[in-house]
Image 1 (cartoon, one colour):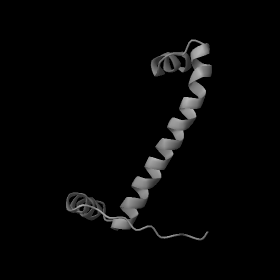
Image 2 (cartoon, one colour):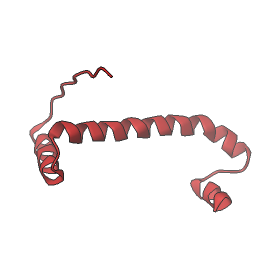
Image 3 (cartoon, helix red, strand yellow):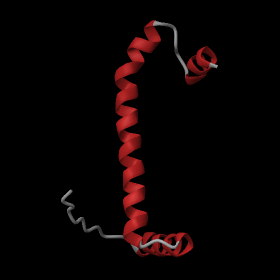
Image 4 (cartoon, helix red, strand yellow):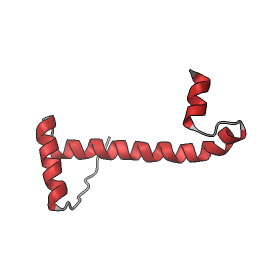
Length: 73
C-alpha cells in the first residue's frame, strides 16, 4: 500500500496538546494524529450512512436511538 504525506499547521495550543498526548501514549505525534484522523473519518462515514438510513427507520417507527436499542435488547 502506497502512503501519502499530509502537512498541517497547528496553533501553539494544539501543538502542545498533541505533544503531551503523544508523550503520555508513548506514540509519535504522527501516530496520534493518524489515529485521530481515522476516528474522525469513520465518524463522518457513520453519520452520512445514518442520515441515509433515518428516513427508512422513521417510517418504521424508530424515531430515536432508544427506540432501536429497545427493539434489539
